[in-house]
Length: 351
Image: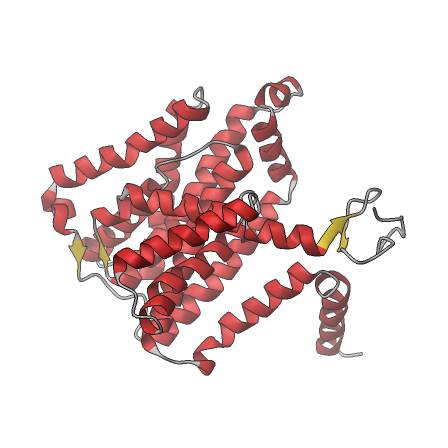
């Protein structure tokens, strides 16, 4: 068997044994493929713009979930990382002429440093105190932005920076695969030993510390990782919109990330991504094009949808779907479809 044929065989075996056996993974694969071929189905410029921005926000919301959903370090000022990266990318491009492929990683590095700046003084805080402490940082940075207009252009923001690419479709195929890849990386982190430690810190930090876990180091790691991914999203946003302004530090953006995460399902990574990909196109495209709903009514409809989901699916949309279609084997802890009687691996009886 030739090497390409071996890889194809291995891929089909992986799909058959690990993906198609669970409804959630099958749905995720279908959605990923749909996103990748969407410009062929509908090359309409505006809807591609909506999907690009939705994908950028999906990275941003998932990064909030990596920090707050998994470690329990509730961050009400998550827009800080997004805004720091956006401004850094914009300033480096405008003043030094660096290309987007250089400014976006540098913006992400700046967001990681911002994560350290936030994480170090907040390490001893918990609960409400931590949430309100993180809330202060983007407000402070907005004041700094207004204080040095020669660099940040004040309340007008920075405009005219280099575009992410030369065409809308090229930008689409930069952002969408980036969102899928970064979402997968965040999910793998959450599913690793590090993610397990994050869970332990969220459930009982005192017990985790007593077990020998350096909780300080892992909380700082969570802040830095969250800042890294949010920073990539901020850099992509700045170059796609060709601007960076105070709106990238807006508290509303931080709360939107929380709403998307809660709607989709906290502590899942894929939940916030699904939440953004459902709610953002709904409010920015469907309700406008097909129903001509004004802005105020769109916000009301979105709020009603979120409240209904939280009322009937308190753990989020994707978590509810997973619980209805899958169940965990009591012996080997693997996921199985809900209608199986025995585990697909160890053949133990399923409850």
